[in-house]
Image 1 (cartoon, helix red, strand yellow):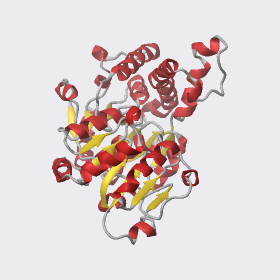
Image 2 (cartoon, rainbow, N blue to C red; image 1 turned 60 degrees about the vertical axis):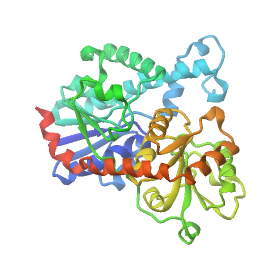
Image 3 (cartoon, one colour; image 1 turned 90 degrees about the vertical axis):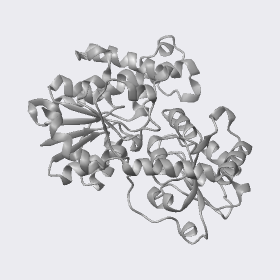
Image 4 (tube, rainbow, N blue to C red; image 1 turned 90 degrees about the horizontal axis):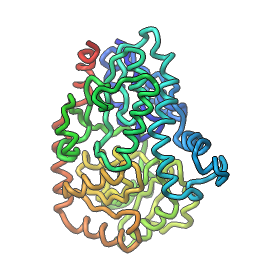
Length: 394
């Protein structure tokens, strides 16, 4: 069987699907993976055939800006940055990007790829519905693959409305107005105890699958490898990094007098953090699976991949939501008793110090995280899901 996986062009969207893609290939299926070209080196490193589909989120925002009302009235140009756009306009652009621009690009790019029956099944990331539209138009069965908590807030509801309009414009009939109804089933890697109650109650076929953290192999920095005892691991992911936020958080962690390992990601230059205390080690890239083996606390932005990986390792978390799915994941971790949250409006060095000290000093947070880790370990592995994929083609 020939299977096309498809994700939006960001590490946090591609990596959650790689365990199943690799398991499907190991099971003897021919596997290709469609995403933005910026992720193709990672796909090749994983031994998968890359297919170009879609473009980057910044490019999509510029496309949305070019057609926005503010430009029509002469209030800006194509060089506008996010800081130059009023919040209400930025919110509208966000809806346009994820509800129209990106899904249209992906659907157009995948149309020739899926033509002529070259693939038997499409496994698409649930946040990449353009692939579902392309599969529907080509008559290819599709399966949705989740990346985390499926909460529906006001902004998500607006994006859903825009997506339904986009689907209608493309000639895609969405059963009952439910976008996930385009899929034969939904592969859910979020442990049930954390998943949105309303989503679990929805009449949607679901397949549970254990979240498996994917990361390129590597060693931790020598200064951390040689340190005695555990450390705090700090990351804002690969898309939402901020020099100012990282500096504030580092300042807040210093009073704890423990080593701090900082992964700045591709958005922040390590040099921009300035001179750091000896016990703070910063690197652009960190072998996260290795970091999670020794960390005592994970301080992060609330991305689904990092959230689930830390929980699978039984680690408590201090989450600093920076947008996207951060608030939903943060709420799920807090409600499970496995961590605390400091929202952007409340972020300060003092708040970080207080919450991090609270977590490290109370064993109930680690106990709650270990409870979720046990739940995750009991979920079916990607290899089990791979054996079921053929049944979704009929």
